[in-house]
Length: 173
Ligand code: FES
Image 1 (cartoon, rainbow, N blue to C red):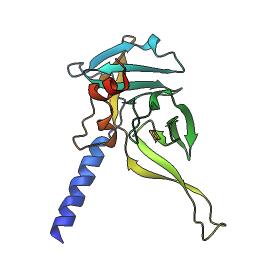
Image 2: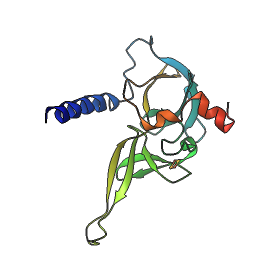
Image 3: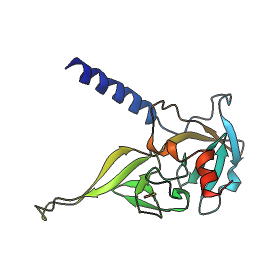
């Protein structure tokens, strides 16, 4: 009984680190932040694909915030970065063009519609299947966008596709 409890506590503490708000205050020093592009470059449908070390990251600008998350979809490596951005169940999501999975841009959760086929009168609701796409901290200073690699130490499914090896397999730089 003790082992499942310890495992659960570990998962919860790990998840809370993943879920830390990804837009940081501007007052902190820039030591562990990487300048990825000028804010003025985030213009192509309010997004910009950048590389930070070997990581492929998409910067997304909304009316209220800036977000950074892995570019290739956790599900099968699709080009999530070119997906449409829409709201589902109150969450702003990017929709992967390959199989239409919806990823919340703030925390990287996969969201889906849930219904009860045995009870059609029950309302359809949006649910989360948990964090699947790695998100990163992002901020703007002096007109430039800075990214800091996520503090989440556990494995996130999108890790397998957002690296140099996968880009080379696709023939991308
Ligand atoms: S690869 Fe993105 S939904 Fe399948």
